[in-house]
Amino acid sequence: RANAILPGWTASGMLDPDQASPKFVDATIGRTPARRWGVPSDLGPAAVFLADPTLAFHTGDTIVVDGGYSIF
Image 1 (cartoon, rainbow, N blue to C red):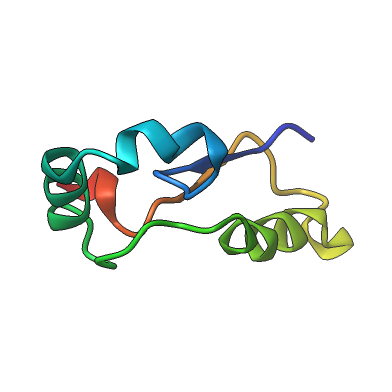
Image 2: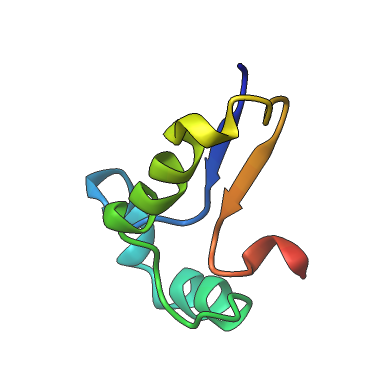
């Protein structure tokens, strides 16, 4: 099986420089329907879903976990 999880803007050490910019924060969060940064634990449920053996025939999919950012 080949599936992927595509995370959106996730609060982590890598994002710290960007989160220091109020302009960037306003633009990013303002465009995200969930109105918040993602956190690493937001990705876990997607991984558990894809790891479920009942999905053995589910392949070639990308699950976007971005709080709705990509729909705009």
